[in-house]
Length: 391
Ligand code: CTP
Image (cartoon, rainbow, N blue to C red; front, side):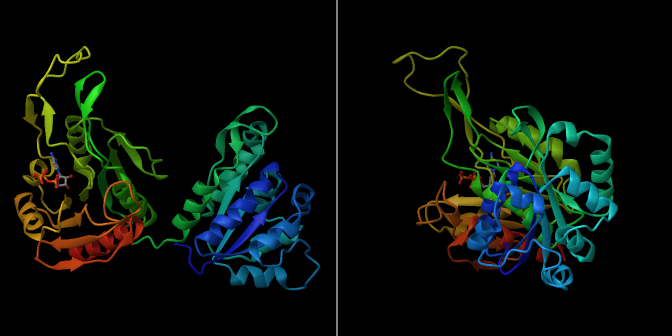
């Protein structure tokens, strides 16, 4: 997502400066080129040489080393991120004080900017920091964190620099085109669990990765996103409204609750079709049951198709075998605008992997087949199609 983007990374004098080395690496892993500028205080914590070795680019620290570096570097950059940003630097940025190379660059820079504060929680809640954070936000500066937890000084509270994957995701968010701005998208993800007794359930192998990738992509593109998630082992994307659901009935209730404001529903969840008719309050002992009496769950997509209006409905069909006819039948039966078919038996298209091989079938009967792609890329393809369908 950050391929060929030029990122200017400002590092200020906080203990969290050591984490910025990893940040530089992770940004480069995503394809970005990283140039580092450090304040004098940052150089007391960590040496420029380390950043130079990691990024392969010269590290700037001195305003007077080159007469024009405070202009040239900012003109060349797609994103200016300051991580960690101390209370002192935040206050200076807000007031326009330019007393070192980093703060000079801030004044000459005209592109998107992201700040990751790091400080003791007493500094963070001080009136001056609060005031200047507010002022910077008002001026369109993006913020990530700070996180809460144990601080380097041994105290607890808000002030830790946000975790590196979250900062990297924020960089992607800031740099992504907001082509879904104004849309409200409801995404479901993961399996459901249908209880047999307090310790056992019926479920399926869905990991939720596809649905989470869709929610992440929708957020990056500027949509307002509600994610209804079954039980999964994934960190929810930043900026989504998360509703957790365990059973198909809970998922149905969560979908119905969020439906009135949604203009697009993407059902990536693997909703269990059946549930035990009786859910025992006590654990069944060995041999006490030999069969399960099942009742059919409501089909959520079918149910909400009755009052669909202009809302777009996207379904998934995870099949054993590339069964286009079956997917087409589901598209018709559930009155979908689009169905995403994948053959779970194909290598790289099954459960719990980061890739998928999909075929998109829309309501105009256009069938498009795609090769093995990352689930992030599949999410982008789906949104490309959604934008086409909306025209
Ligand atoms: N779906 C749903 N409610 C259900 C079951 C499925 O909304 N109770 C949705 C899924 O989220 C998916 C689509 O319907 O987007 C197709 O689900 P799938 O399990 O492939 O199909 P089913 O209709 O359940 O048919 P079958 O299991 O017989 O293939």
